[in-house]
Length: 208
Image (tube, rainbow, N blue to C red; front, side, top):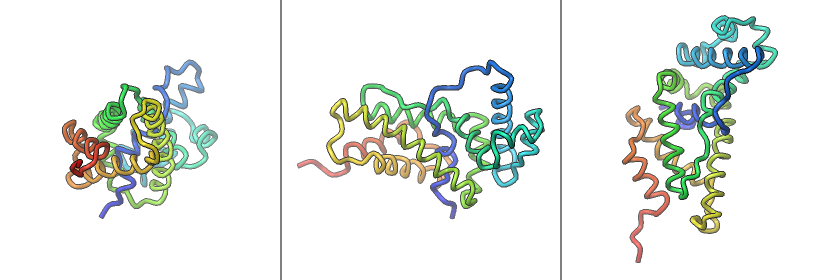
C-alpha cells in the first residue's frame, strides 16, 4: 500500500507566492534552467533516479554550479517543486468555500499539465522514499501557510466559529481528496470537490 502523505499533486503545488517573473540576469536564467531541468528529470526518471549530473547536463551548466546553490539532491528537488508550484496562491473570493474551491482547482489544474502528469506518475510510485517523504513534509508546512491565509480571511469575515483548527481543516480536506486519488488514480471533479467542501464546512448531521 502506498503512503498517502506523499501523494504527488499535493507535493507539486504548495509554494506560496506569485508566479516567478522572467529572469533578467544570467544568474536568474541559470536558476530557472536548472530547476526546469530538475522537474523534467523528476517526471522522466522519478526521484530515486534523478542525479545532479544529469540535471546539470540538461540545463547546460557545470555540476559545480548546481552544487554551489543546492548542496544536496533533496535541496534541489525541493526548490524545483517550489518553483513548479509558485503560481499557487491563497485566493480571496469573498468566502471560505470560494477560496478553498479556487485553491483546490488551481492545484489540480497544475497537476493535470503535461509536466504535472509526468510528476504524478513518477512520484506516486515512490511514496516510501524517506528523502521524498521529508521533502513532502517541509512542503506541507508551506501549504499550511496558504490555508492559514484563507482561514484568516474567513475569520475577518466572521465565517468561522471560535476554536476551529485550520490545520485540522486542511487535513480533512486534503485527506478526502487524496483518498479519491489513491483509490482510482483520478483527481476529484468539480462536483466532488463541492460535495467534500459542503460536508467539511457544513457538517453531515441534520440540524434540529
